[in-house]
Amino acid sequence: MLVCLASLANLGCKKYLDKKSSTGITVPTTLPDMQALLDNATNMNRQRTPTFGEASADDYFLLPADYETQTERDQNVYKWIPYENYGWPNDWSSCYVPVYNSNYCLEQIQKIQPTLQNQQAWNNVKGSALFYRAYYFLQLAWTFAKAYDTDSAFIDPGIALRQTSDINVKSVRANISETYERIIEDAEESIAYLPDLPVHVNRPSKAAAYGLLARTYLSMRVYDSAFKYADLCLNIQHELMDYNGDPDIIGSFNDAESPFKLFNKETIFYTEMGYDITPISPFYAKVDTILLALYADDDLRKKAFFAPYSGYLQFKGSYTQDMWTPFTGLATDEVYLIRAECYARKNDKTNALRDLNALLIKRYKSISFKPITATDNKEALKVILSERRKELLYRGLRFQDIKRLNKEGAGIIQKRLIAGQSFILYPNDPRYALPIPKEVIDNSGMSQNTY
Image (cartoon, rainbow, N blue to C red; front, side, top):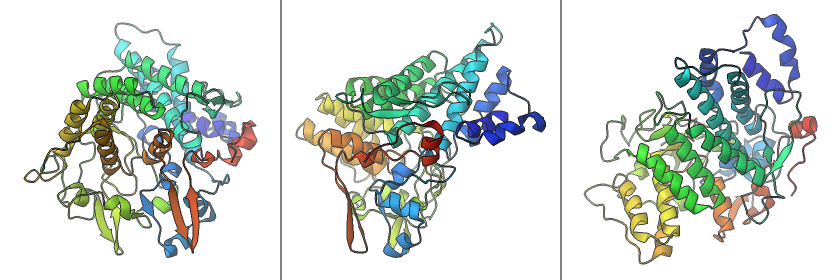
């Protein structure tokens, strides 16, 4: 479609637009056209969320022989050496395709008068476009900007807040404060237009918008607001799969493939990352042994999530039912953990553990499960954060979690040992904001992250 091609032009490939007059492609202008554009899962949901943050996190490691097979780019990402020549497509360009399509729909829908007959369709297009833009702006901020810090948000560089489909408008980099304000404004505005639940989880909904806002505020460490939106989300959608037995578990935990049904009952909104970077491919990535040691023997996730491979374990437990494209969307398990963490940070240990145990009773063998207890709020928070890591690995969340938890003083130090040489990423290191692709910097004149 023209819009998809134009999105490529937005990223520096104007040659695509030069062909539009001879292709005979129809420009989407009607509500059904725009809904179809937003329903195109290839452009809006599938293999769209960033991969480089996941590759920069600590849930996996590479064996020396596997490291040597990686490209120069992927080796540098693995050991946190800033590298600008990503090639194309990349995390930046992949996220701006749905942003472009959202901007296009938001512009076109203003030309259509809502009526009694088309109001529902009009609302869904507008709400969905606002949601998608907020969703991918957050993904970009998590990858290419520093962790949100109230003290420096007005000077720390954020992302390019593209709000037009006009490719001739040069991208300008906003600061982090402006970036998060835009994300929140778009997500909040979308709520008024979206249904409580979608006709399909590839589409946004009120529950998804609430979940997105909970994610956003959690990453900002604004825990009262994160709690508010997590609670609103769970008031609409709160089902969890029971790993002891559930209709949405369609395979054996002993199989090498994911046992979970695609679009299962926990899925609020569906997106996935692609393996644009090979170190996190299950063919190479071995699950971190320190992470594995956190799982008790009666924790059903130990078999549901991992499969033996080449003498180690690989991650298989994605909600995409595909090891190669991990699930990164919004799901109820994540929202329960957000609310539990916020309860603990509000010094409400009782409700924090209530939410945590509501999840864990469906993750441990029922015959041996004993509810988690804690002596105080600090211990409850520690357990919740540990369970967050165990539950949400390979969701595109760990890199951002390390960033924001280090702002809380967690002191998480990442280390890689390669050919006898140690590579270390210290808390709050500038390299937690990954380099913007060089082609984007050259074409736009935006400032690059500095190290």
